Image (cartoon, rainbow, N blue to C red; front, top):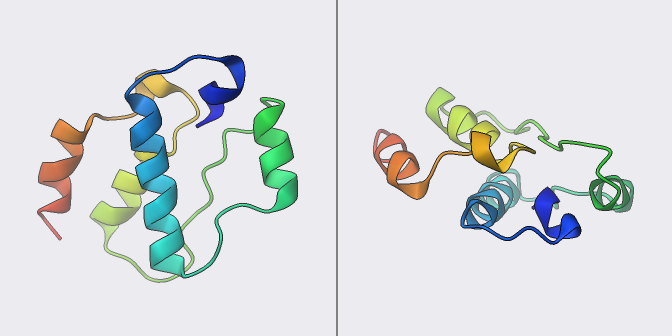
Length: 87
């Protein structure tokens, strides 16, 4: 999560990790390039890569939110789980 590089820790980091992991599984490719990682470390990007393969709209919404640069903008898993049950 972007806040990791500034030393801020919160449960929202788990949500970010979940979103990135889901993107990797869905698209079957790494979600970051080396340039992306460098930009994240320097706080220069929010990083929310779009899903490349076709996906249900609710999945797009969940993953876009989970990968928000701002931790306070990410939903909790209590919100995410009911959304995923719609799939």
